[in-house]
Image 1 (cartoon, rainbow, N blue to C red):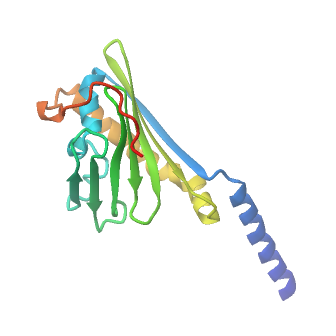
Image 2: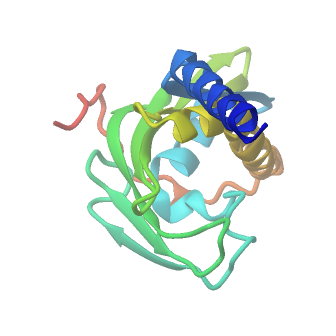
Length: 195
C-alpha cells in the first residue's frame, strides 16, 4: 500500500514538472487605455521617473518607500531605485533603456533578487486622443516553479496594478493636472537602446 502511494506521489510530481516545462518561459502582461489628451501631454509623465509617483499604482501602497533617482530625467540611462518593507513593493530599480519622444518609453526592471523584466509604454495618438499601452515581459527561465507562477499568477498580480496606474495617468492628463515641470528636455529623435 505504501509503495502504491509513493508511486502515485512520484507520478504526480513528474506530471507537474512535465507540465511546468511545457509552459512558455516568457510571461507577457499588457494593458491599454485611451486618454483625451495628445501624446505630448502624456509622454513627460511616463518618460521621467521624477513624475512617476504622481500616477504610480505602487506609491500609495507604501508612502514610506525610499526612492533614489540618478541620471538625467527623461533620458536613456536615467534610473529610479526603491527600497520598501512592504511585501507588495519590495526593493528594486528601473532604468530607461530606449526613448522615442511622444511614441514610446522602454525600461529595464530589476526586482532586487526576485527577477527582472522589461516594461514598455507605447503611445498611439489619433484625433487628439492617445491610446497608452503598458507592457511587461519577463523570462522565468527553466525554473518549473517560476514557470507555473508566471503562467497562473503573474497576470493576476501585475494586470490590476497596470490598470490602476493607467487610470491614475488618465485622470491627471484629462484633468489638466499635467504640470509644466513634468516636461523634461527630450531628444528630438529616437534614441537607441542602451547596451
